Length: 105
Image (tube, rainbow, N blue to C red; front, side, top):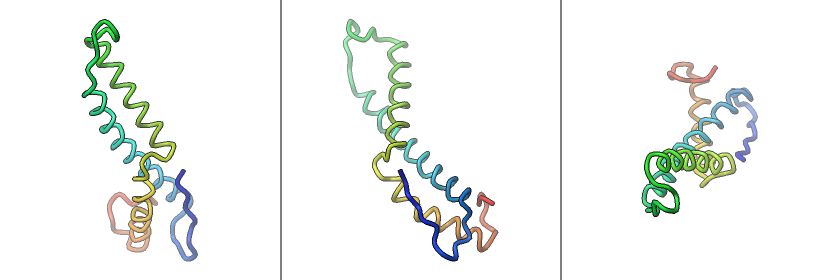
């Protein structure tokens, strides 16, 4: 998973770091969900194999969502790792200025 070491002089609490980390993972999950839904939508199945219709569409949607969430929780594509330092820096700036909307306190 994503590892973060609190730097000396940082104003971030462990709770803030955890929330920011979760946001990064959630963002990657949304991206991966979109990616897997598009992947599954391009797969044409024989109605005799999967049954076709509404049931198959529903099942594929749930399958792509679960696959994306599992991928994101297990490191995904590294998007969350790439975003995390910038998100933490933004949170640090929000702590220092205390003016950015949406900053965790």
